[in-house]
Image (cartoon, helix red, strand yellow):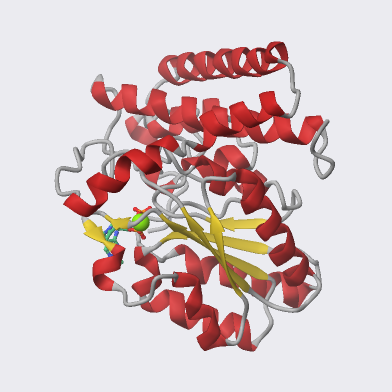
Length: 324
Ligand SMILES: Cc1ncc(C[n+]2csc(CCOP(=O)(O)OP(=O)(O)O)c2C)c(N)n1
Ligand SMILES: [Mg+2]
């Protein structure tokens, strides 16, 4: 092994997770195109290195606050993709018995406190989980994943100010994919790096290449160590790229000239393809890589079948397990 920092199993694990996210989202897109999926979904295609690198730095009992673009966060935490797929199709065997769908997908057994349809809604939720962990003295850490646009929401500023003042064990991960629906973040924010906002709260702000899983993992490892040892929150801004439109039904025709010109560069930086090449350079055999891919394909195929075969919830269940 040329890379002394990582074992072969660690590197293969990163690749497996990113490849699974990629294949999962491609199947979700297919469901949408075939008219099998109720509603819409915001795909994580192109952003795989962010959740993969971040979640690899966590313990099993840590918490995650997730956004509307949440599928990747669940996959990175090792959630069951068959139950995720069933949930997205509104089926009874889904994580929330088909009542949450893509935008409220959750896996409490993996510390996922839920995806959120309210932009920035997960930031106070994860902050609250961090407060709870500190209060109970459990040494758990909470992570909040949100987009660039959410940094212009009041919840971002209010939550981070409180977490900084109270040294809460939380890491705020900005998935800066350049866009909030059709709005280029650079047209509505006057700083090049969103992580610079950390200065206003007296906490560290780190900018990281969100297309490189190892750089994300390294930044996250430091922030998690800091949070767990009682030193308080960190903001990590991952520079990444949204491959598709805002959601599966959005052709993204509004993309600005500037961004279309950048597109080729971003696409050439595919986190999955480039990490595959890195594995080969690191002397992981092609045979091993192909085996990882084949195993993921089998898992995805089984998940698709599980979701398709699962029944829709009965109408009599409509008011079960909900708050009224
Ligand atoms: C409070 C609130 N305002 C507006 C919306 C509509 N909305 C849904 S997604 C979105 C953009 C989010 O962009 P960003 O935070 O960058 O996340 P991304 O979709 O790029 O991952 C907006 C404005 C909403 N759901 N909630
Ligand atoms: Mg965005």
